[in-house]
Amino acid sequence: MITDVLSNSSIYNGISRHFEQAFDFIKSIDETFEVGTYKINDGLFGYIMEYQTGPDFKFGWESHKKFIDIQYCIVGKERIQWSPVKKDIIKTDKYNIKNDVMFFKGKGESTFIDTGDDVFAIFFPEDAHAPQLMINRPEIIRKVVVKVPF
Image (tube, rainbow, N blue to C red; front, side, top):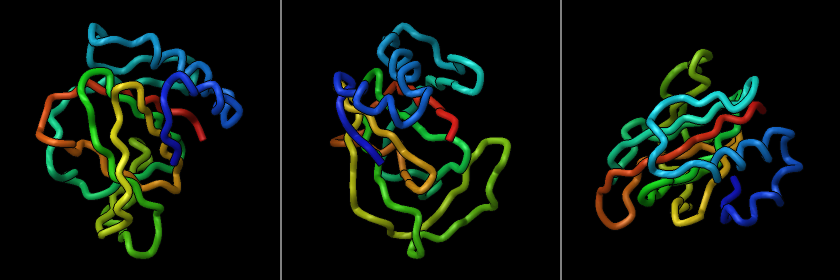
């Protein structure tokens, strides 16, 4: 997991040949972009979504096998809990190949990232994450998740 500010994003371009385009897309977005799926290039997609944050992520934890997530709040702020995928997190569903997601339950680590206000988070396949968490109170956020092939 990596968390930083957008102005430092070029530091991470060497991780993947797609990172520069992914961050360029994130920097080009504002609150006028419609909710939906955006093809950035072959294999690189951005998903803009809108939802209300709350005290819990109803699925527990999630992780992915084929994609790295770059997550950023366009409007509002979101807390995301992070934990390495390890023995004290138990898989609750079979891996969903089509959606590249698996869900877990368990305590995990108590590490939190507050995204928005220029702060982004990168989650790799070994990173379980629980998004949709509120910081002080529930709020409607607009967020982008860029899926980078791993």
